[in-house]
Image (tube, rainbow, N blue to C red; front, side, top):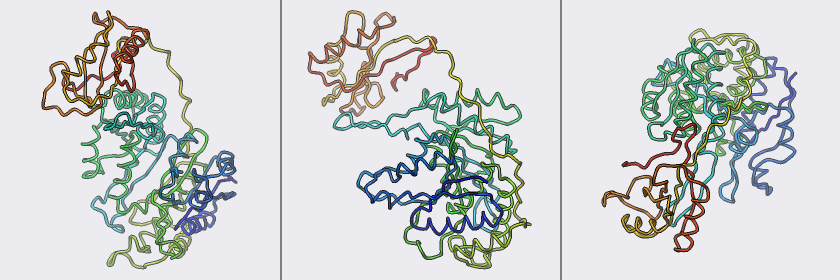
Length: 478
């Protein structure tokens, strides 16, 4: 018996959760359920996070959370509960299987069968944003080695455990050479530990185009957070329906399982919603807690139901579907098919113990770290890069000199183009004129001069080399 935490959610949530739990219990799942309240009601009670302290304690105590969709009220500073949970509970891996159900659910890709493994905690979703000038805001893209290593290793281990043959990595490291470059580098390192599994890397734009056109070419795809968020929805949609997709959010101690669709308030209480997405998440939950025989029974019964043409309104199609049913009736049809297998769709056979634990991350020895310069960011309302150069050269010290100015990442001084549009946000790079290392005191001297000259410095970024490797970007146009 496994104790799990359950939240029935908002909108269609209570209906699809009731249907899902009926199927699981009818299939023999050994579950003890502790219900909590999260979502709209909690938000509107004055809790801007949408979850109470007691509910947090229940999730952390039971470590397995099955969650129906929730509604986040608009306005009022309400935080996304999904994002909060993923970060607070360390749910680093978002896993989304995307398999077509041709010919029973309409799709242009009848042999598609892939899994997207999305990093869940960092990247641009760190949510660190600042307005720096009147015209420029920034969002910090944070990529860490442990974050990369955990998600990439999970993708390869998932492929190994579920007998998948290839892991593909999507990044944009031809542009973001430091952040996406680290993700790609770690992917290559981890891939060497799995020689039986094919590995490949795609630049995300062409990879996304190929995924949309030829998804059968992919098996397991691992990506940083933003790309994974976008492309997992694309992949789910081209299988036939986002409403059929489930999702697992996996951490080192806790895990959360859900449908990927929203709460659909207009359908609430009408017995029309398709419970398949949440049911798919629940099947992943059963595998995670080791009840693989039950997971296999439920999945095969669900496939048989789809194959029988017993469909809810969202996927019902004349000439293909045979019976249009509501939420409760669909669940009952799945229950009736327990113990049976599909004859056209491929039945599943899960290995016992389908969940797995990854080794703890081991921090590598610290690298030799040298300070090579500093980027000083300045708000200045002028438009002439040459004037800006003259202004900033006043901050030179005897050893450290202005070497470059960029605007939105494009070099504008020295030898910039007058056609380059400049906003009020300037990056001014200072380095030792003889190529030597600089000190923190040099940076303080530059900033002190900026105060004296009434130059509006808004931030600095130190420029380092790690083990003699340049670890910062150069300006475009150099």
